[in-house]
Length: 174
Image (tube, rainbow, N blue to C red; front, side):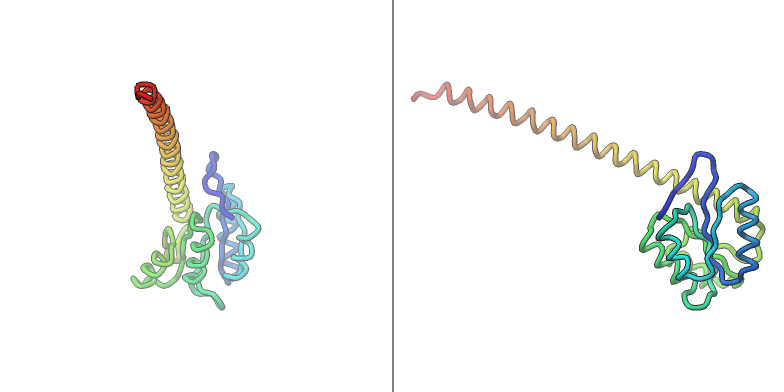
């Protein structure tokens, strides 16, 4: 489940990392800024948690046993396309960044990083999502208005055609 954007800029974040100490450190850092945070120690655990809870963003490590962060990101984006994902890794190869973005990640962050840097990235991503959602809403509203206008015009045209046919029928000699 996905929950995108809040008015008070407090986010629900899922951290996926097989290193319990790092996951807990990230969780406490994020919670210090009043965000709600849950952790999962594997990709499978994250997928299970996503079935029952809503999040604004998922932060996942790349190197994990079983399901790596790229596979997890790809799976999550397939099931929850609006969920933002940040991929984190200690490896800074260009290929790693490309793989993360190709898998559907919204951003990529190289370890080590500061909580401040992470929070700035989270705020930017969630803000971007809010703008996109607002644009989608405006598009949907415009589409609905257009459909209503077209339906009204079609009804008006049908009434005029019917009246014209009646007038023609009245003018025809029997």
